Length: 111
Length: 113
Image (cartoon, rainbow over all chains, first blue to last red; front, side, top):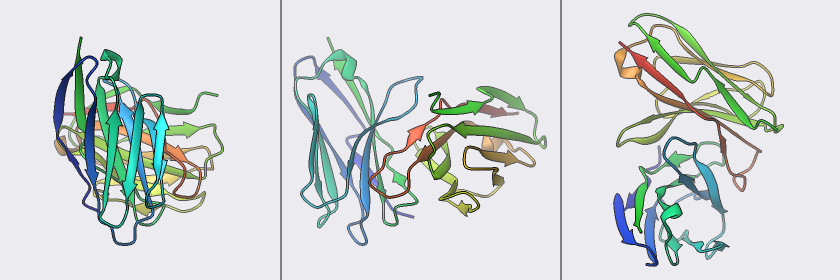
């Protein structure tokens, strides 16, 4: 079992602010890291899949970085909008089969 | 494409009753997963099937059994439901390899009284 931790647990930001969250995972035998966006009453949807140290991925105003040597990934949201309000989950794997999820960061963007 | 479908959406069971949660995917994915989601606990893996014909235990397998019926379908069975199994259950699927994301079904909300 991998211990995947996310911080902060929850976050409230004003519309237009930029923000970031952290995902920490065991760096030994790293295989892949996934980020998911989970809106209330819906299913998690994939944002990014990262496998290489130094990976940076971007989708619109959201981006993510990966440091496999120290075991962390950052998710950034630039110019937050109310529709960005959701829980953001990360999941790590050391085998490519089993993925272990963090408990998520709940983001609320205040108009 | 329907993606990943789950039935039922909601279920209430009495302690000791049994039931099977159904999951199907139409994306030709090799791997399928069952998770449970509890407040403050995140998603925890119950069982997974890396490919047709194989199943393996995840983090919290006790009290559950699974069947990978074919490449499309992966069912989760509760033989004797307990209140501790009250949860939201998600099925997911993905292609083989760590570079591929998981696609989740809509979830089944199960209450055991």
